[in-house]
Length: 284
Length: 284
Image (tube, rainbow over all chains, first blue to last red; front, top):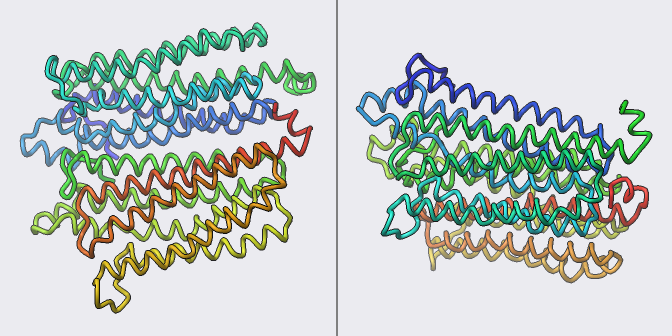
């Protein structure tokens, strides 16, 4: 693993360190939220443990991908044998970094974790099985579809025969297609779930509202980054690389770690509401 | 570990990334399904925990092999010191990749996991000991035999003295021999197990039907790939390498992770059916 130098080839030392340290923060957040949640599942009633376990699974999957991205970034943008050799040939080092930093890890991570975030959200409400299962049958496929449709645009795959607008037009098409399942998920969460929430206590409704806003706010980072990177198939500038990696990482930490810990809080509150023994034992 | 470049020697950058990211998805799916199932065994009645633990063992074994395959693939087909040295001598890089990518990992994995998948399937039904044990005494050896007989064909070992048909004839012989235990397993699952299923609830029968179809569909990917690769002992083309690795990985994720999670669902349903206390505690 390569350490940040004063000056790496494609990014300045400060730029490199910003992403490098942010990815390391991502690793630390995901790993230790995971360990905490796996162990903390015992602090809620059995019926809410699945929601906590799914939250722990989400941050664990992300932990794996942050380790991979950290290595991939160091390899593509750091000072090491490969980048020294490439720099010696006079290669465009930003293009070299872009080609050697594997953007696939983020999309595979989201493909697995975004549907699971919606599973956590529904599981923690402890709704009747039929209602939960009807919600999940719509939310999970929509979430997977949203990620799959976003990928060709962000990875600049160039799959469609676009005349007008060229590549920017193509990215816009994928971005718009991906927005349809996103809006559908928001519709289900904000409109359809109103009924299911009426049976919850005021405290739980308040936290659920925070969760929905958190989803809307953090998921909003992704399309903004997507649009900023849409200006063409050419290699992103150094500041675009830094903004994208830092932005995605902050959004991921909020959407997975903070989200998972809020799910755990809801599970704690509902456990205390439903069992006096539990509330007394846990000091509520 | 080497990252995907714009162009690897034997595969294009897109081809390399497709397999690389698919193997990484394999790692993530196997590792975190394993952790989830190991922890989730407590969420079912004791009598169904063995089935969940065997499911977790299967995905754990596969996780190990996916780490190995990921490294082996990067070593054989990626840009690194070995492939650079080979390319400098003008070697056929597809043949170099094929020789350095260890196909043995997949067969060792299947040899261990395929019999265990049938153990999960029988264990979760909670049949009388005598019936379970009679089923397993036939299913487990048949599954092991199926994998052993398939290997010489897929690894192109050239063990038989074939005159007519040459190597394609030999592969066809191994393929046919391997099909006999496969058909026997299907016979046991679809015909002989009919009796045992009559004692199960409608929900369980429905999920068991899904499991059988999943086995038939995913195991079907393997012979299709086998037949496509049967056209001779020469090195597979780049697109054949990609199709084989992507196809096997998707089939493995469905046959092991999805299968294991369905086994867990059956165990949850049967636990709730058999114990009112369990059902109430788990919020069924």
